[in-house]
Image (cartoon, rainbow, N blue to C red; front, side):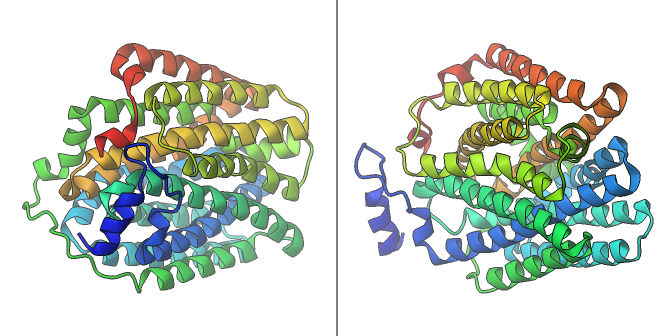
Length: 423
């Protein structure tokens, strides 16, 4: 271990000593990586607002909005095992760069389809390739990121990861809404998303090559499924990511925000950008707060109660007719979800050996994709069948029931203590 890492380790609050809130950010490559991700995520969030607004303007269909998530999640799920294996066997930096480049090309393609008023099927085609890029990006970049810092700062890094992501999702939707309103269309937003991806590529390029031993196992069904086998054997990890998946799958209202903005709250694209950004504003505030606090002493109960709160505020949002109340509930949902994200990411990384990180990250990516993209499809389908209000309120109730089921099936989750004790 280098002298700088040894000095940093002494700063950590492992035994109630001084807590260094910026421990992970003291590493140059981690800072480059994090800044690049902020730009990439910002562009992605701008693009999400643009796609939702443009497609609903053109079709007025909840099912079309739901299909946006489905088009991206299918390739992510289909390629999970292969992407995880690639992340553990191949150069993680090269895979990350190639995936970022493909995302930039997909954004440029969306700009062309938007400008020419191309068929909806062409939008979905671009989104399928976006899903392919993300399928390889998530496990490779996640596995590479944890190589940039020592294990002793994983908890702090997980908090700053959440902070950087939420910062992007605060800025992105607002910029996307303003850009649509200012330009009068979504085409320019896709171009800006492509520029952000190229900037991320440029920041990732100078990160030093890591001399980490990668998996040398020959490709087989057993090695491909190594991540899934590891997660299954570690039931506390399985419980945490399962809880998060079903909570967001059922309780997520983000996919229906264009409907709520236009038909229920009666606001325009700028206000839609605010609604899209609200969960991230709450999550950003919570993530920064967590970064400046000592590690949680009772992570399990904190996780369970935060998801219960997520379900409650989702129900209130679904029943709200006030723009400001809806904005507040979305902000609270983001704050509560941030707690879950930090706990889950720290738990997964602390307990996963390096040679399996790519495959475990791929499995985790499937759970995240299922909760976000499939959740969007589920919300769109439920809204088409029963209306958006029933879809959101029912999802919130379902989230609370999932927490109760999780606490009963995995009682050890209720007893999970301080995560830094497992480092």
